[in-house]
Image (tube, rainbow, N blue to C red; front, side, top):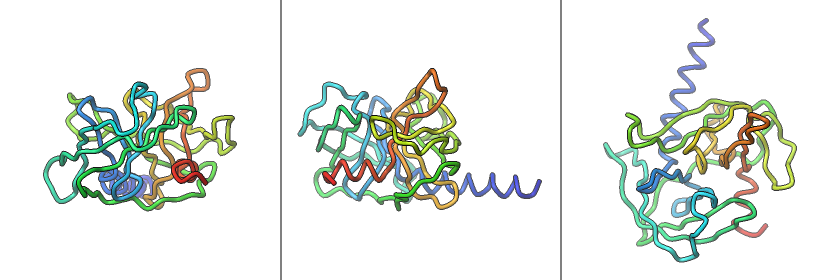
Length: 193
């Protein structure tokens, strides 16, 4: 029983720490921080977006009691990969998460996403395990817990290390699984590697 309580406490600590890497827009679409001035979300949340389009984001600031507003613009759009990259403007910066490029099957993760305005917390948390690291035709892997509406664009953070391991793209209803893009792929697509 003590192991379960310790694991739960560790999960709460990881979620609290990792929440600083989640942002939202005024419509409560979720963005995840990749670098100090770069965030990512899902393209399907913004199918009409164009490069250079301005956005107003709200980032979690661990030193402030509320989210901080920042201006950003669409930097890169990859519809076939369902990714939309956003760059902060005006020299704005946020803390970037450590990343784990080698996620393994069975690894536990916490999916953090923006909550709806009616939710008392600034983010929602789901717990899951990587159920398959076999890359599908779209370079995605699977998590065992289906994501909820609004989770798209949320970051999956290792329960063990707190590092960013994947971005949630949605779910496959027929499988009951979350569709995740490994952070190694997200970064590789960003830089054309």
